[in-house]
Image 1 (cartoon, rainbow, N blue to C red):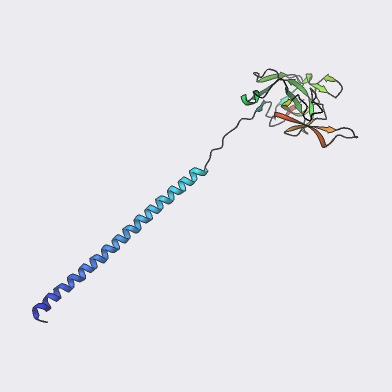
Image 2: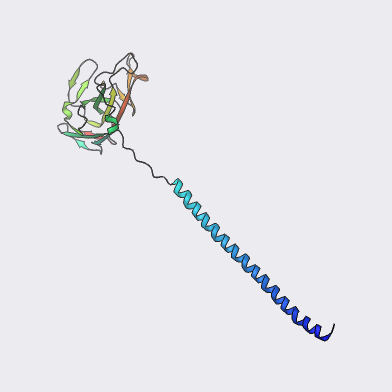
Length: 223
C-alpha cells in the first residue's frame, strides 16, 4: 500500500466508526421513544378501560315507593286511650287503579305476635290520606257478633290491607271483618287457623291473599 492510500485509509476508518456509532445511538433513541410511547399508550388505555368498567358496574339503585305506606304512627309514639290518633297513609296511583267494588280497603290494629286486635275502619275515599281514630271505639269481631270497646293497653301497629271480596278458594268468601285473636298477618297474607281442635292450628291455615298491605316500622304504645 502506498503512502497516499494508507493516509486515506486512516482517515476513512475513524469516519466509518463515527457513522456506525451515530446509527446505533439513533436506533437506541428510536427504541426508547417507541417503548415510552407504548407504555404511555398502554397506561392511558388501561385507565380508560378501568374507568369504563367502573362506569358500567356502578349503577344507581332505583327507588320504588310501596303501594301502601303507613306514615303515622310510625316512631314508637305513646297514646292514651282517650287520644285522637291521626293515622296517616299514602296509596300509589298504580294501586288505586286496582281497587274496584270487589275489593276491601281496611285498617286494623295489630298485636306484636301478628294477631288482629280489632277493626279500625274501612277506607272508602281513595283521595283521603288520613283517618282520625279514637282507640276507645275499636271494633271487635268474635265470629258471632261485633262489639265496640278500647283494646287492652300495650304495643301495637296499624295494618292497612286491601283484599278481594270474591272467594279466594272458590268455596269460602272472606268475611267483612277479620276475626280478633285468630286471624294473623304474617307480613304478606292473612292466616286463619283451624279451630276444630282445642287450640288454633296454623299448620294448615285458610289463607287470604292480599292485594297490598303495609304496617308501621315500629310499635306504638296505648296506655
